[in-house]
Length: 280
Length: 337
Image 1: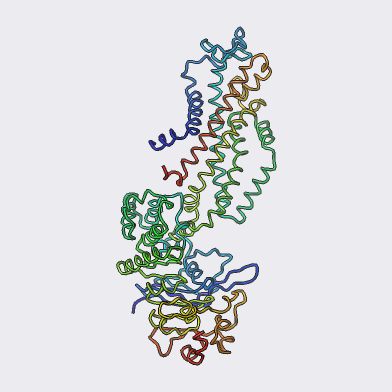
Image 2: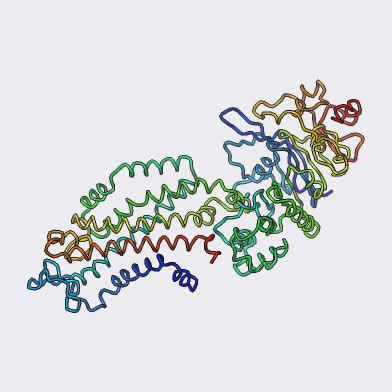
């Protein structure tokens, strides 16, 4: 843990990413205890009031007079929780499938990779829209849809890695000490693909946050009155010329979170690589 | 009578390739006594690695196919065991060291974890006991400051150190048999000498039976009790080190020895004419006959059996139709070429 902190403090980009992420995660996690106004409380008399840094609505209010800062914080809760769950689901599923397909090869590999091909040939947004439209918009469905559109990226990349890894001599030496195939997959292959999986996961986290926003923007994600960044963007877009704050702040929140994820992910990849680890 | 550790009987292994059936190991039989160190030499494709991988069940089948034979390890036929039973033998009763220490250790796992893996897998020790045993093993193979090494990654160790770690892994569960497949080939000469010294020392201390596969006659002379010269998946000559080196009876081992540089004799190095046979269409008789200047007509026709050399020590066997000392004496111009 001390090594984690000291190496993080030495990387400007990594630290910036970590701070950005920490601000948004903390803001979202602690939202109920920050004494913010009710994010769903409508106040028609204060609708579209501009940001007032020292007043009651620091980031202004939306067309229904709801506090933007409060909605941003509460909206972050759903956006980040949905994104993280979907990424973890997709990563676990995709990595497992990638390792199995790559390591065992043969018929299993062919079947799994054709499934990936089919899905890659299908527009992701279409698929997401279709599933959510059929099953109905709910947070659970959104998570499932996003995980389903995400696993094939891991599977593809991990499988390619495993194909070269399984020919390496350490796999043969693991067999020579009596390790079984499942054991080798978990204890020898998985640690070797954890880094690429993590890289994909950071890229995916960013993409999924944007996807959630897009789904909400289209009205298929989080349902009103629950706040969500994408939905805030959608509601504010009509007022972009008269009340810039309504779209700017949720837009900034998305951009900065994604940026933070990417910067931190980049640093994390270097941190976890044993080759760079020992030089420090 | 002492039971042999290993008794290979009529082992034949082929590879089914798109171009045809490749005969990798042909009717191979030999025994290995407890405490014996067997050096197997031969060029690439002579079946020396393939037959050990076969007996450990490490050869992917297909394309490999075991046509016939049995491999009795302490009385049990390894080829008849299930994968699960083999897993219990590999690493515990038979240790193996591979050629390239750069790639045979997992780059993202610490040395300690890789050592503990084999110890915990077979000896059933807990984490702390396995760590203690790992430190002990690293000390045994001559790695300084073993406790600190456990937390290091393979890339932090030199090639020689990594090969020592591989040997430590091979010896972790006190195996009856240690197989080293080209274990010193990837190392530079000084490190090679250190590793050979280490193996010789360990052999004397632990009494492990060793199969040492190499293409370096010098390494075999340093280390082995018995030498077995293989060519085209067959044994060409086999016997105690001294008689085979001083008076080889197979034209192949004779050629190999003459192609070694020597400090004593200043002459051109001998070059074996031709190249190894295509094992998809092996020659019908003695596989070395096409390259053998002493080959008789019968060599081209029939495969010679491996027989005891009449006028040599017991155990010195050769597969040849010709009598090499007589042939060399009759053709001094070839011998001096």
